[in-house]
Image (cartoon, rainbow, N blue to C red):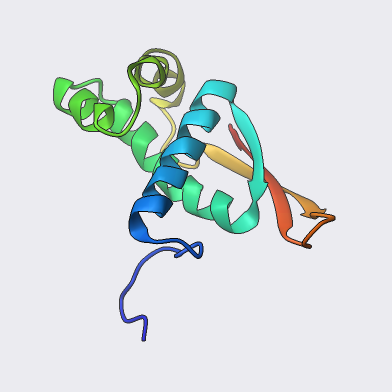
Length: 115
């Protein structure tokens, strides 16, 4: 039974799921938008929005916490370019746009982008 387990399992063990979300967040911050499945995008939304919220304050402690997850290049872009755009925004930094099913396996595909 899944009692009080938050988030989606994405058919992966915990370490692989964390690595997947880290890679997706890195791609999102570097490119501005990515194409992925709906389940992955919904899970990525919560992870990336928490990162942006933490990066908005520009504290050294926040930089260190984010530095444990992100590479230095992505961290610099997040702290210096992306986060300042959202200082006045209360949340909702990402937009998910549905594209329809994937041809091969029928998975619902979406584009997730920074607003």
